[in-house]
Length: 310
Ligand code: TUI
Image (tube, rainbow, N blue to C red):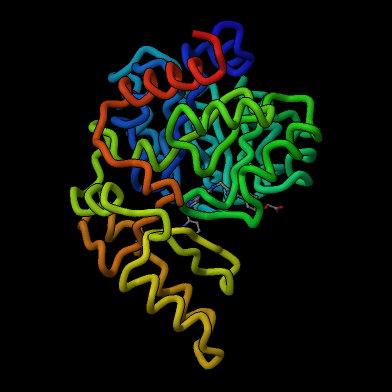
């Protein structure tokens, strides 16, 4: 895996990036992934500036390797998060769930490399024009907020449309997924679901158990009506959300309020019945709780073997 453009760009050993999962991707997980030779990310999600600064400072104590911050563009605190990223000397951010146009100049001026998560060719071309150093092409197999195109269809179309490196995401959890991504023209992979069950990932045990037990048809996308489609493991919450979404008598505002706080209920309280267990379709392949180091080394080794490099 030498001379990989994403590894060279970021100064990392393996072309593996951890998804910026809200409520999940904290300083602990980010540092573990970075220490293992990948790129760890802290999810800024809806944190205010000081909460984000605390996590960044904690990660600096846990690793001397590069790590980044994922900026969730729908956050009410997005302006504060961008300022804190610049003040703390963060070297790389990923952006998700929106168009980062408003923040690109400030980030670039502060020397931050911006990698944008996109779900379409149109946005990929726009962010390249704005100065993104790479894009994550995230297919709708992924967990959390999703677009409409699958990884298999999205990645090669984005690869053909831009000149910057493309990182594949959505439905990748092992060496086969990584090798397939490379065949589609990607230079690296981003994984979320595989890291959800990492030993260093401190989500509630109930959530982890549910991911480890999940099969191929155990996720569902809800929230299309609110404009925020989210993939999560099927449970009581997604069933009632789905039913209410189909019912034209139910107000969209009522649906939105139902979603609020649901992810935190699953991650922190372990309420896997009434909370939102965001998770990708590849959960059926994720059956072990491994260390970040094991996950990254295994996937890169297996992909290398499949590609005839070892
Ligand atoms: O952002 C994600 N995944 C997320 S964010 C999140 S927090 C959340 N919680 C509840 C409701 C909604 C969000 C949980 N998971 N992934 C990156 C990603 N970005 N996937 C898709 C996109 C995306 C979609 C549309 C990026 C841009 C876009 O359009 C922007 C535009 O204006 O064209």
